[in-house]
Amino acid sequence: MSTERTPISPTPYGVHLGIEIVEAVDGAASLRLPLAEHVCNRRGVAHGGAIASLLDAALGAAVISSIAPEEWCGTLQLSIQFSDPARRGPLVAAGRVVRRGRRVAFAEGEVTDAQGRIVARALGTWTIWPGHPDGKSGFRAIS
Image (cartoon, rainbow, N blue to C red):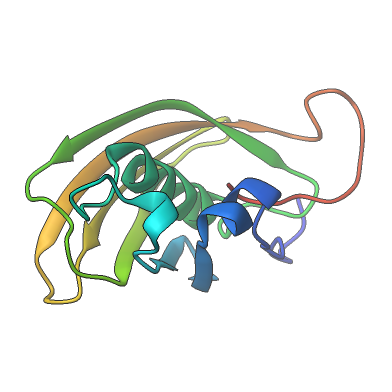
């Protein structure tokens, strides 16, 4: 396995939401999501699906930053607990790998609002393949 790490870039879905990768290195990642109208409900609160996508991307980026370029990964399970409505942005998600084996990684993280309040937490499990799951090679991105 190579010691070189995988470069990370947003997927078209992440770009559509407005997710920005602040940093992803050595099993930790920080992502940002401005609270734009298209990710909020009619009362100006971030939609739970947008927060879930941000958490999936942050934890996934943390896992990707811990694997070799030839390896691939995918979310097996993601559990999210919402604690407060997200009314003030930008939202910042922090993700980190808490344990990594040869074929599975466990990650955790949280989303904070502009006031530093935790609005959601997540725990997740990622499968790790030694190569592309379909035997292909090429561009890798996070959601």
